[in-house]
Image (cartoon, rainbow, N blue to C red; front, side, top):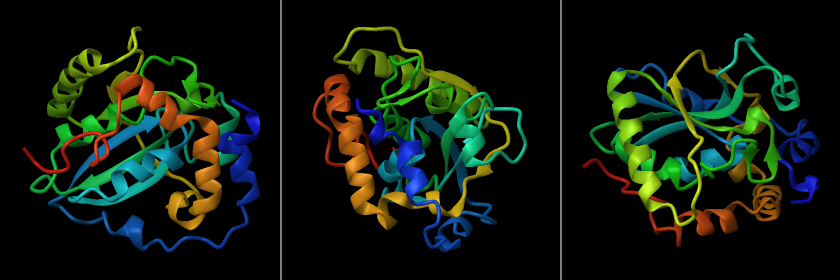
Length: 217
């Protein structure tokens, strides 16, 4: 795809945008009844969107994880070499939505056959990855991969990694809720990047609920 649609190039144009309210980030903090899921799947703008409106999801925060560099900046991560991936941290109510349901949505929003990035965004910082937070999540993630392999419409080896979660660093304000706050730029990026088209090739038509059951069970 033309590089002008790449996530990091469009981000430069909005870096001076009015900061987003931190209310959505704070919504998931300090609640002992919530659980955490962490996923990477290319540009984090497009990973926030599928989870943000699911019943039971309290907050979806864009950030960086998977590398050794403490408190990385967007400029550092998007340039590559930090080991970090653009990722999302999801805080959810397990009485309303299950981790299995989130995993199903995850698989339907990534290209698990791509080892060099995701869609038009290239480099290890745009890899697909599941970061598990405990042994139960590890078992569920591994089981979900087996299911995903059978559901794929395209032949190939699944390269999405399943690794233990480490520190998660919240991205700069202008990246939070990007799909809402810059709807036109986001729409142009997603169309130009070819995410929807490739997702349909991989998984078939997208279910109305975004790729998997939105409730516990």
